[in-house]
Image 1: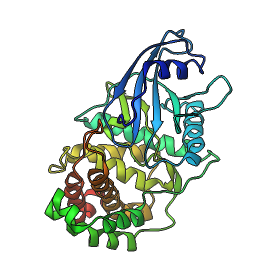
Image 2: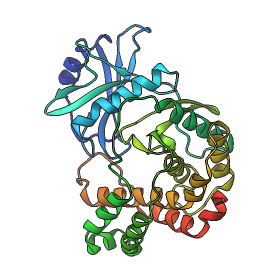
Image 3: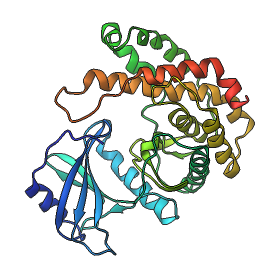
Length: 324
């Protein structure tokens, strides 16, 4: 959720007019995140049609041919009462449009706040909803390969020059060999569904302890459900800088998940390695973003060392944490 592309008020008004949501009242750029340009849109539409939306322009890491998968997945999950925003289709019925050579989509705005320091109760409910989403997504007819799996993470780090990695932090260079080892040992044939694969606290909206929405499904793919749990564990169970593990949060997350969908023996055995791969994924993507993000982009760079520390923790303590 960054703003790479600036759009005039007139351009935004013309775009909103293509949808049955009323006229544009206001548009505010959203600076968080690193991959797309986003705006909070308010319109004069009726309560039935909604008055607040998220407009996304797809800038990076998203192929146009993948958009129907992402947007149809939202509609599938929403139709089955999963707490996700629905796609707003334009007057022709299309779920996305082209604007200035880039794809854009209008998404339902759902109320709620993202938590900075999740409680065990909040984490437990996130685990429950994640498991329920995995079950519901099994019936989704679409399919998409994980474009950010461990092989890709290893390749991304290998392509970054040692000088570029060392300029971020000298310790970052050591992850290149670790990444290759994780990719070589990656487990196969674990139970699969469509997974979110990016379920950070800022991609979950909550009202108190209750989940009101999972958002930003633009890394969703077909992959191991336990890997999605591992990604969520890495995202929710640590201080932001990765220096402090919060066992009460991590345990509650897994317990909540297993209350809806127990892990099988193979999944449980694989969890320490899956968690290392989850941490590695964000080490590699953050390192690449740090190196490649334009200096004048309205975006906050994220430190890959936050996830190097998680990676090191899972290598030391993974078997204890997951009881494998």
